[in-house]
Length: 196
Image (cartoon, rainbow, N blue to C red; front, top):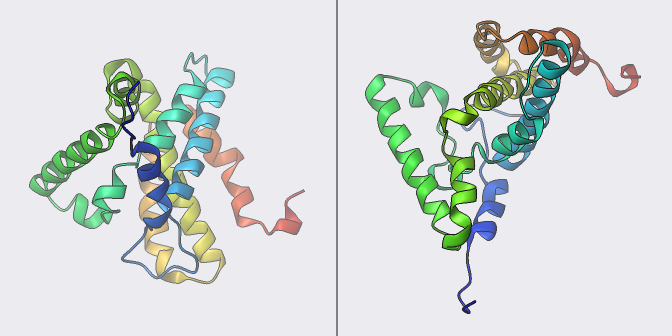
């Protein structure tokens, strides 16, 4: 081993400085580190639901780890607001290219011998497509939960976002997502004293 040091983990620790929902007034800020943990917890749950109730054979731990890393590139790119990111196909393609470049940059902060292990967490491969579908669904559900929490706090800024995000969730053709929305989401509307 040489004396060279690597910046990967120190760089990832900066996820806590990247706030989400930049175009909207928030009653509390949410950073991508908090968001990634919530997405990992939800994605893991979706995988367990699939395996338990819908004859799935997906690895919940793999799903959770992909979710943990799903927004790491935003340390470099920031959290691009959805209306801008998907404004038109050209912007979407350019942003995707920027995301890929930023992921490569972060992976370059690892020792070469470790890079392959992390490459598969940053870039989608065919073997993980079922896992990534659950991560994407969990990402949407996490955004929906943020809307519920903001509306509970009296912030109507999130009213339209909640409707739009709920529509995108209902379009996801995964029974585990429907199950999660029916069985677990209602509790997010309750106060702590009501959760028993």
